[in-house]
Length: 455
Image (cartoon, rainbow, N blue to C red):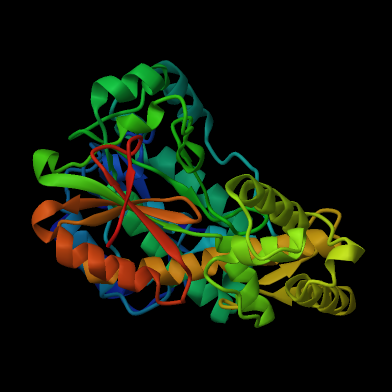
């Protein structure tokens, strides 16, 4: 632990001094939310804590915290910090971006995840934090109650735990893609929120006391999973696995009322087609019909057989490829691919994902096996294709009222403004079929009552 000094910026002159002294330095930033108990997209910034890595000086700039008389607007602070030319690190980039729109942030949790395969499971709160969080559970301004010196004490504890990895980490292609493409585009997706019918939503999730503002709820994507496939839950709701048969999906509607609709693009037989990309195999768009001809050894298969084909294919992909199945060309090539990747993994202790070149190593996989490694590769491939597509979608829709609002691995849900719908829906379809994956399109007034449409 090294000695640090602390400056509470409390005048315009001190703020200018802070800007001058730190403009070219490498910094660690932590933006304090005002509430801290709701989603960051539904919160407001309270203050920002800053460590200058080069000289170990700490600074606190208040946006709304009462401990200083001088306050700065989040717009001015975001602009000024974006203009800093040194490296800028923050513990949770998505959360920080919800509160302050600062450019060129580096995510410390991502650095930790890439080094160790998981995140540090430690508590950096002070006794003051624990007291206030316990005593004022209904307060919407919890972090205003806690003195800034206590916030900086917690900040210093956290820095001590991470600083060595921060200063020695060398960003590579994998880190840059995950930090820039994945985190920033998931931040945009989270920011869009999901519009809800409050009555219906509360009939299913009201007991969770989720804050609904402007008829929106917010999702939170976590990429720090063993496979790198994002989970998506917030406030006790698992948005990645909303049940299809209990009516809860009817909670989610268009924010545009009668002028809007929900539109969903769903990839068909997504994993077989992703595998075909991995193994360089031409798989027809009707993948299950194609494979069914091999399973049942006949040219035509019926609906019941088609359901069985899907189950068989799923079991083979995620289980063991049986010897009698290896005579099917598709599975023969899969088997060769699995053996090749496993041999590489055993030799070098890692493999790289196909697009972002993220290492999957022994830190990521508990009790590795050829089949388990293949499943990790497949889920990583799915995620990377999806994130590349999401980036293009966000760019295309950035100046439109239509927005992507939910990502569920093989599908993306959009909240469409009807005036834009014909052109926008066609272009969304074009973007999402760019990798030649077959899709199905659905439309409806709510997420629970979608019907298939032709686009």
